[in-house]
Length: 105
Image (cartoon, rainbow, N blue to C red; front, top):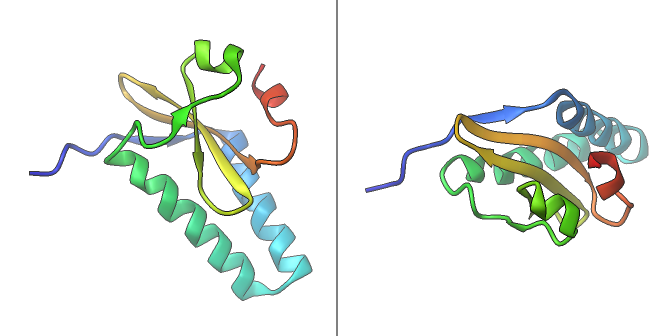
């Protein structure tokens, strides 16, 4: 028996992040690259609905204390989220090499 699915709640900054990633790939590569990267991101985030603790506790101690988790969704991008009683809140989807923790503090 599969565990129940949690509700995925994308906050506006996360939605904008995904659009920005798609735009970047569209401009730098092509429409197929934009489609493929967004499909991969959304497919991996969707796994959280069934397995909310799939991502690790965030390594930044301040974010970890606030309950943030981090899921690597592609070779470049990470999803920052929190598991709450009413669902899984997706805060950001960003390049893991930038100083993204400051975006959440």
